[in-house]
Amino acid sequence: MIRYLVGRIPSIAVVLFVASIIAFLLPRLAPGDPAIIIAGPDATPEVIEAIRREAGLDQPLILQYLT
Image (cartoon, rainbow, N blue to C red; front, side, top):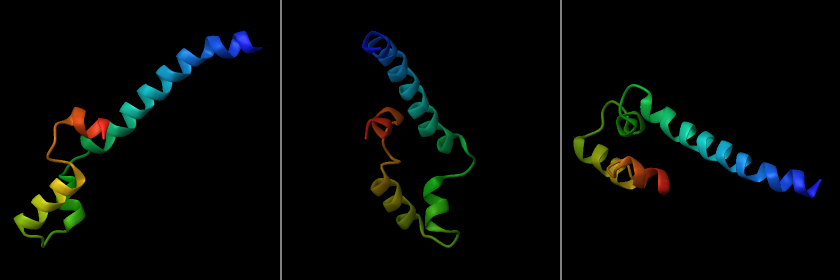
């Protein structure tokens, strides 16, 4: 039983990694800017930029994923 579990751990790690990438990318593939959606339609450009900075949306995708 232990040998079976040790053999399955690498495949479990790969599945979790792929699932985390999919969960990360799906909202970014949706149409629209998340910062504008959060801020609302009447938000000023300064508020939208502040939301982008606060949420880390101004960083490259790889840094967003790592954080």
